Image 1 (tube, rainbow over the protein chains, first blue to last red):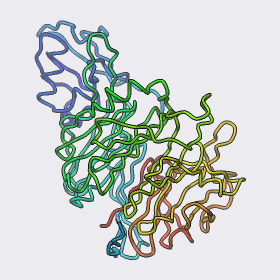
Image 2: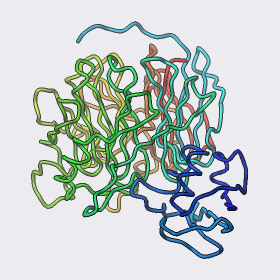
Image 3: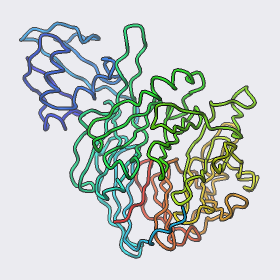
Image 4: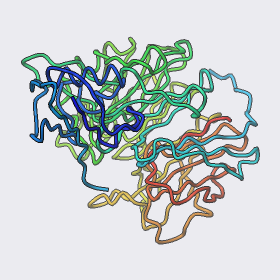
Length: 86
Length: 380
């Protein structure tokens, strides 16, 4: 599936804005991304498996709040890094 | 311990952590001209950047960005190349009936004892203590603090403006298992068994913000310092004054009472002379009414004691004499090991100031940096 990466994570993907990845759930997808780009998951998901406060995950345009969300091979996952302040 | 180390004549390197990245300043032999390298990790909040004195080349850097979770980066060549920790500091996964904690930022990094060359400690927000046994690659929770002590004291562990911090992880140079830590807010604690069990060490320290008159813990130490040549001598800059403790006593003495009353004895940092346990510097800030946390009266100054806190002398020659409303955070004031000792501090307004005559005169070394969180001086 297509995964859109936000710029704060470009250091992990060598600047790639979109990547192809697999996983039957969001949790599996993130594990697969972390295997490919070590350290990436921890920057988005904390040690209690909670999505960090300034990260948003969208599947086919729908905001998702649980890593248990099932995924299909043709889904599109967009990771957004949202932050306000200076 | 009375052995005097040989006095270094090496050039100095300053390791600077800021709200928007890290910078490395390399000085010449005279400590007058400086070349900057950086920014490293532009845009990252760098709370601490520390050289391993045991190998003289490994740097650890505590970083996060506004968007992303906290991590630690490691360099084996003094900052030329960086690699992220494989397992950054993180609390254990909570059980089903628990509310798990998550590290929000790594605030403090300390190399362990000289006999443990690959061991490091990290302190975090919210308060947590972590250990690495492989030079900072993988970090594990120190259960004796995180899971044993913390649940017992959490009623008095409160966040300050930057969150609840665990800092000032000090290792007794005579005993690798003897550590001091400070919680802001929460107090000072000591372990004699490498972190398995802890005792509070706050007697004599005021905590005017608490209803209890003499609480066992819950105080607000801003910074602790232990003299390397006299490890039983501790100094503390606290939210409620400047203190000294000579072990085995457990009773802190408020040496800040000798500061000028119009300046007070509130501040963040305290710096020790590397060879004279009676000599220390502080950088007072305004702790009146709403706690502006700026230089008192807009007139910044360091204050030095040469008699263990019995008296203090103002040292501000070269600093602005008015309308300078910055201050110095707890990790942002340091000394080198040269003769005479060099002093360096970074300001909340992004300036670095230095003195190469033990504080008698000061000059601005750098300006226009982001808000500075930490400055560390190491031999080049």
